[in-house]
Length: 226
Ligand SMILES: NC(=O)c1ccc[n+]([C@@H]2O[C@H](COP(=O)([O-])OP(=O)(O)OC[C@H]3O[C@@H](n4cnc5c(N)ncnc54)[C@H](OP(=O)(O)O)[C@@H]3O)[C@@H](O)[C@H]2O)c1
Image 1 (cartoon, rainbow, N blue to C red):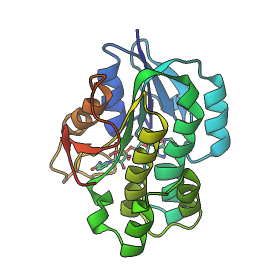
Image 2: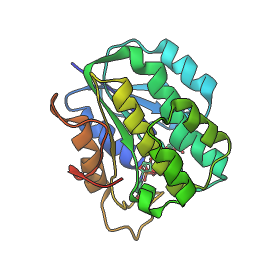
Image 3: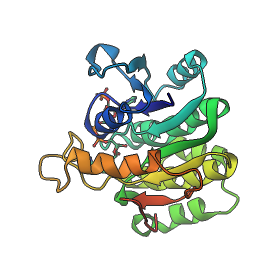
């Protein structure tokens, strides 16, 4: 059975994605607090705080490959810009890099992004940096140290990171997927989409055919400008 890893899998969109993937994958629920992890039959629970580089390194050392699906779902909306970027950008960067050698051929890597990360919503100076064709992982790590804004800019950087990983990992399908505005703790009760609707958008990226797109930003299976 293929293996799938979902970060931030103890509630919200991550939990719904993990539940669906568990139908035909061995799922690893990567959560900050294993004691609070939900029960999913046959799923494995692993401790992982994506904001802590040492936690990522220890987790990656424990994990045996190959990994068929990696969902970088853990995210935060509030907090200081540095704290937001540590979870939303540095976490996916370090985790994907640490697991790159354990990805199966044709693995799907999904970065859970947001429409608030669209370049059209970002300050001109950030757009210039993220669109620079010579942008590197180190440039993105430098932005994490001195972030040019909070949640929206962090997701814009995540979209740029997606393009870098798509180039770096040509055998994998690496895409950023926007779940839309969803009724979770983050989205609040007034959001128009159910958790299942948001999760479906993410699951599209997890279940792409081997010749599917890579390096794009999608919502409900449709490319968006990102
Ligand atoms: N809801 C929306 O409207 C919406 C819209 C666009 C994009 N998104 C994106 O969708 C993803 C999931 O959001 P959600 O709505 O499901 O949010 P949520 O209900 O607030 O859940 C967030 C999840 O991320 C985990 N998390 C936070 N910081 C973490 C860390 N340092 N290490 C590991 N896990 C961590 C949380 O774990 P704990 O329980 O331990 O805190 C929780 O499981 C996020 O990337 C978010 O930006 C959401």
